[in-house]
Image (cartoon, rainbow, N blue to C red):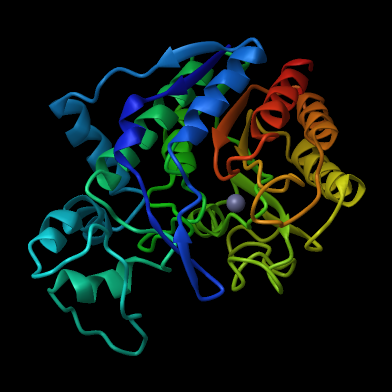
Length: 347
Ligand SMILES: [Zn+2]
């Protein structure tokens, strides 16, 4: 069993973040990958560096991305920084200074104007290396999915930047492209029924929206109640799927500050729904940010809680692709990940 990663993620070094009006350094830092790789090795996974993207592969990845995201959006993410850097006095990262609001149907050409359409918040800055890192994360997801399609029982896609907030045409929460949708596109050729279990502290609104009307993909998310937590506008229990897929999206919000017992009860409900669905493959959107040591303070889940969540997933007894989402630097990021991965393999 392997952990797939790609050194190009280092090109993405987001700096700007604003929380409750205070500007501070972004918490989605490159060092996370070093900690998570080490944690995976400690859990017995083989370290697998994904080879460089060739020019042909790049074209292929972009082409496949345009079946997930709008082409204008993909083009914006890939080309925006070059245009931004030419603006007089531009800072190092694209941060939107305006929000595109309906009913305007204007199509400004200026990159600063477009940033208000394609960047959903100020938590997803685009720096010089962001687009290439985001493409690399997609390759990591596709490579890991191919490993599962080839018969592996478990693979860990150490994607960075993460992807579960990215919708068809809007970034969010440090996510640019949907790594999970890219993985599903690979897996679908052999596995018609796929379940996604998102245990990141934040609701996986991007994943939900991309499979909203698709009854072959069950999306389940356990997250801090959006009444009080990002992404605020999605993640409620009444969001159950589109007309063609009613009941194929399950949101399990838990109170901010929830401890193991409450969080695990929700994870168990999610796993029960997945068992009923009888998927060919389970994808876990792994965020370690529900952990009590995580700097965002969403919940109070312990290392043991992550081990128990891993055991619940292992009990589903399906080939499992773990895709990295959030979860930030803390002394417990590594240990929680190791315990989780050991438990997932125990099934
Ligand atoms: Zn998160």
